[in-house]
Image (spheres, rainbow, N blue to C red):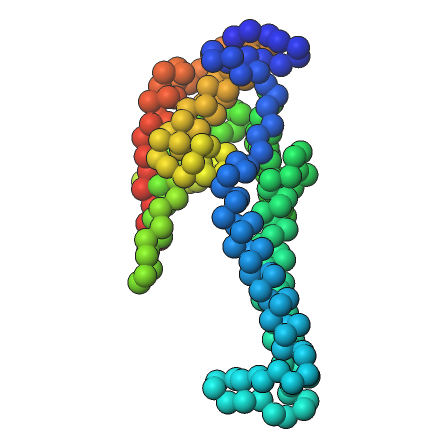
Length: 225
């Protein structure tokens, strides 16, 4: 551990505090999808409001004057969906976004999303491991990977999830290896911070070693939903 400019440095040279932003590449699809959704909705509403435009609903032409006036308003919910999706994706790729980030400091970790901010002291977080979430439907199967802090099972109870961090947003990509690397990175920084806090307050060292942390991070929990 090396002290550097008021922060700490782990064994691979990362200095706390660190602020991570969501990976921009992961938001490109959402920017394109919701952008198209929004533009198409606006074009449809403008076209449907033009006089002389033939309007059909369930293959039946709309001829009632009042219904024709209200018909373009059906596009408003779709436009709102597109606008909200665009806004969220834009906030995620915005430099120094105030709404989406992961802050890592000597004291702990803060995960900020649009409507929620969650902060944890490192001593309150167990080591991170890998979580694989599989969502199945009739049409497809989606697999998502996370780095997750999971409280160990006690007295026969199931392990309790404390915090999950998306590998697709704060890792390299949505893959198991990316989640393993993210969990190992968080564990290295956690160990360095805890070591700094223990040495500063003269507390005795406790818990597993960094090697044990990395071994635990390589274990994958599979959750089906």
